[in-house]
Length: 337
Image (cartoon, rainbow, N blue to C red; front, side, top):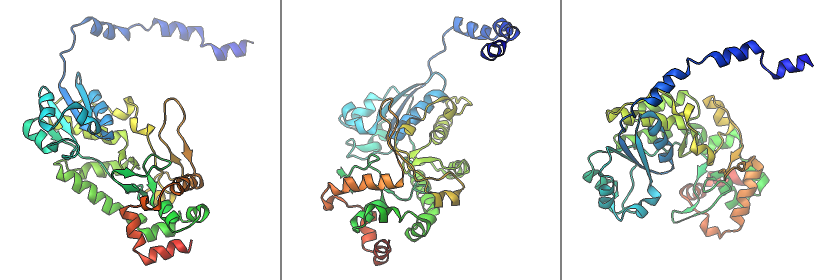
């Protein structure tokens, strides 16, 4: 009985020591009773799903800041055009925006920058180096759903179009097929495209990309970076704007909102090349408190095929699929599966 009691309850000397250590509370009490801190800068963030994590990181990193998030998909509900949006944001000390065209809001980001000199562009991050098999299927106005939102496997989709069944298509997910499709040599091109796109926004990422690569897989899928990536961008935006920056890592203090969304695995042959963890386990978007759907490779291919069978074949289109269909060698590769 005594042994069990000792395991459940801490020794009495330790209890007395814990409750007698009261000095830790003194600075906290003094701060609470002192004058309120002056409000920090007003920051507006215009962006896609990456903007949520960036806005959260900015709020953490910049003391006293008031951060307002404006999702690009909702800009039309906020203002009729870029001039009206500029008027709405005139009181902001700093406006951070990803590029958006006239189709999103008349005038586009160029008109916004012309009206608001405090506007600073930040890049839209797309990096298929870890996930080269991921594509969209269908036309922009009518994208085809998948078991993972709108993200499809090019191999699975093309296997279906070639008349393969689920088992034969699943068998294509192997190293020699990846090599033939160029998946094992995609890194340099993906890195160059990401650097070039960021440089066009006036936000070169050469140094950051090198540092992120040293931390392993820095993407959850082709266009969802991990939180530490968005934290690095937030830190740099604040520093370049001359604003104070806390010396903390956002991923230690904030939940990664994009982790609740789709997570595409790094296929094992690619993972071995990059020295990161690999798998064929696909994760769907979480809903509420429920656990997310998880698919192993056969289950994911089967779920994809069920969707494809219910659609007109004409909807199963895309640049990658059309390019492969025009390549006799790739058609033969799939036919031989």
